Image (cartoon, rainbow, N blue to C red; front, side, top):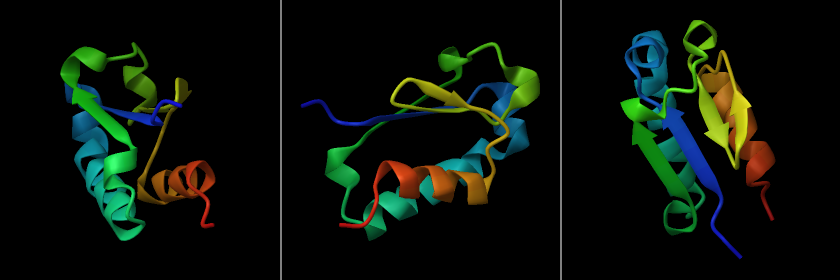
Length: 84
């Protein structure tokens, strides 16, 4: 079974809208739950999805989420990785 994938767009528009904070929230969540080695986190400006006006953009297991802020990211992570 493959690892879940989280892609955080770091294109200039998403970065300006706060995806550096989204990355920090994601890293803390994964560390707190002991999931760091279980999840592939991909970052890069080349990952622009063409949804710049709807950023910040985060893709989890192929599903695109737009207008993501810290609270939304925590909700998405909790849905993706529920407590056992």
